[in-house]
Image 1 (cartoon, rainbow, N blue to C red):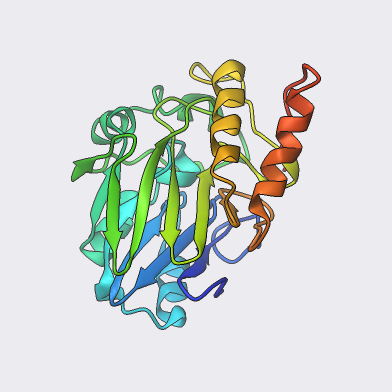
Image 2: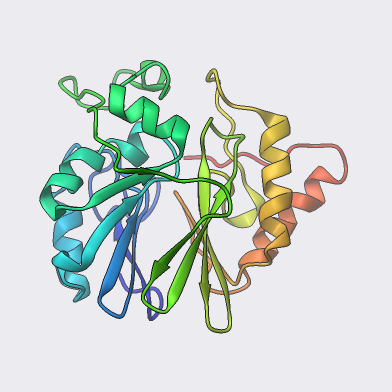
Length: 247
């Protein structure tokens, strides 16, 4: 699904547009001048539909040289190993997430809490994956004439990062599970979720005043993405955490 001249949605499960496996998060393909990255990797239950969507986009599979992850939760990182193999691409993540993935650490990635009956296939396991490079706050990745800026955005989980796409005329934000459309956030009963960090992260992201807001689930905003973040700020201003995303 083409969203802009440079952005395609190539994966989306039951909490989005039901394009690929139901457990998949939104998986974005960003491309310019023959260079492309995937943002997040889905759950990895079945990556064939994601690969088919890449083919349908018209972007050459051989152009996808990097898979950049927002965080370690299985719906976002579980497909990293399979897509790395299929695309011969590098996987990049924050230092914390890199550690969890290399070890296949289900507890650190909170998969031990999330693999409840009906959530994932009985034979599903959180697959370890090599991580080729670790990303730090403020780092910029060149993508044709574009740049992806790495933003440390903890709160939803440890080591969570978002990506600001700097392009001619504006900034688009890939927020993972740090912030969603309509002023929503997602807090869960897991070891590394923090309300305080999450609200600070929303404030930081709102300061970018992004045009596009491309979260890990739910609705996307092609324009006026900042408006959705400001909605969360308004709720925080009266002493409440923003409303929860509901699946």
